[in-house]
Length: 163
Image 1 (cartoon, one colour):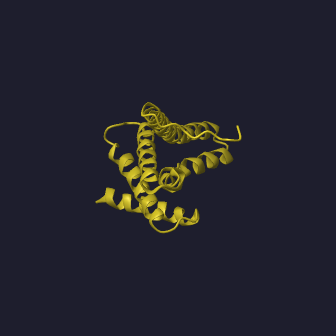
Image 2 (cartoon, helix red, strand yellow):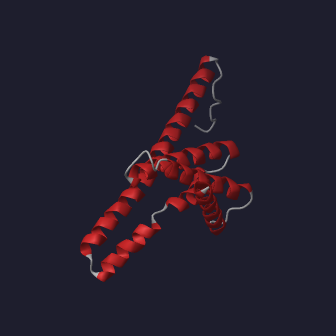
Image 3 (tube, one colour):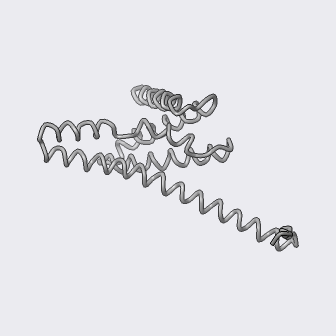
């Protein structure tokens, strides 16, 4: 029950930030589902991994894959869904505590918290980059294969008369 409540809160926060990003209609719902899915992956892996960083990495992969797939289905840029869906996982508390320790003069705690927060942000970014790169390569290969099959069938592109 606690997991469902947390996923609902992740959904609500992604929708709220979608409103801030000026999203409308079904785009808000799709981004909200992405946020809930990311939190579900993150929380679901709590018993599997001791560290938070691999959980954030896999949640970032899940959100990015969901966003790229939704972008293909609904014919919109992936960033529309990705930006709002990542919000529930952004390590805002870590950033806050890093600054609090820094202002208080606790250098060791500030560095430890800052490096952990940087690791979380880097894990999310790497998950998104890997999936985004995979989709770009996949789309490029599909396009090349389509062009080669058209050439093999004897269909050629019309030449530009101005060249």
